[in-house]
Length: 413
Image (cartoon, rainbow, N blue to C red; front, side, top):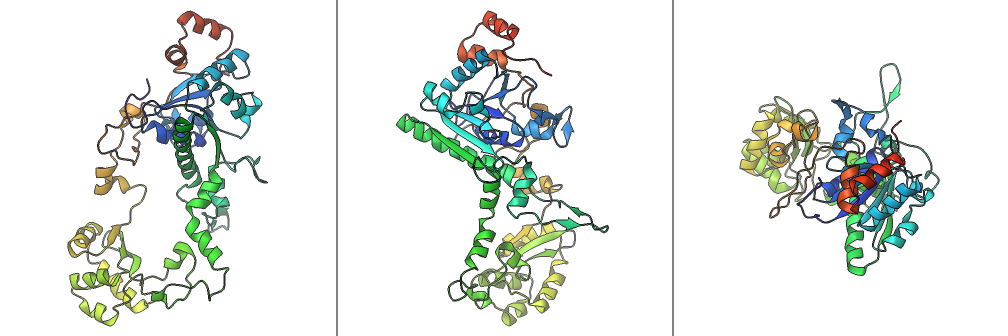
């Protein structure tokens, strides 16, 4: 039935989407917006894509389309196009989450829509964007991360090259930036009465999220007289980005008695607190380090001592102890065990499978003085066709029946 609470109550978005880019509106749903997903008669095949499949629907569909209302329209049918125009007339934004230009080819692009709704915000989200030599290339989500330099190929014992296990970036960051753009456009449209056209490439988003590494490489193209390392490294340049942390000692991952922890005492104050806490002030006296950002790079002797020390306690014991002595030590979790972490359990309570079809994470945005909506399960194909036409456009049951008989909603193949 759509959300009736949340900070974005009253915001309506019409979405035409296929596969992962549909996540662009998931962030809006979680904050109370109404999203109407216009699907072709056969539906978005995201329901069968990737794994796992949960009672017939993919987890991807259950997550990125949760809370949305689905209607089917055969947009090659003139009456279906008229319905689309009517929906856009009453919407804040229209999302084209598929190959750029798809809606324009159907006569439903930005120029056509703004004639019926001058305030409409129109956004296209795609793989490589609307311009450039890769704009028309077919692709899937991992492509944006390999393009952005985020994934290093790995080889097995037989010499076969493969995709390593990795966190996805472009397919998540692209929709997030897109949602941010939609809201900016809506704010401007409500102030000025004029909408806008936006576009976001998931590949661009992946590269932007890794700006520290690419900008470090760019900075290192300048002479050393202009761009150096930091003072604690005697101004020696480290490898760009997080690669420069490999030789760290006071900022490093260590094995505990039952797992791993991340030690982060790169400030002298935290390092001294650690040494006193483990009754090894001799380590501080011998290697006090710089006041800030000193990782004690390549100090193998110190690293050997710390390795012995960290093996004496469990990860949970180190985490608790770190707060007592005021030195930063963090858990090193995996996607498999993170749900057992007490901080995760406190901050990210699952939205349970009985509501969404699979246990899913809530939005990480917490509104402290306002009730947040809980999304409904992702829709079946065309589940809300009748109710959307009746509630938003005022069609009665006879009109809807006539449209169905005329093939406006199409026939699933």
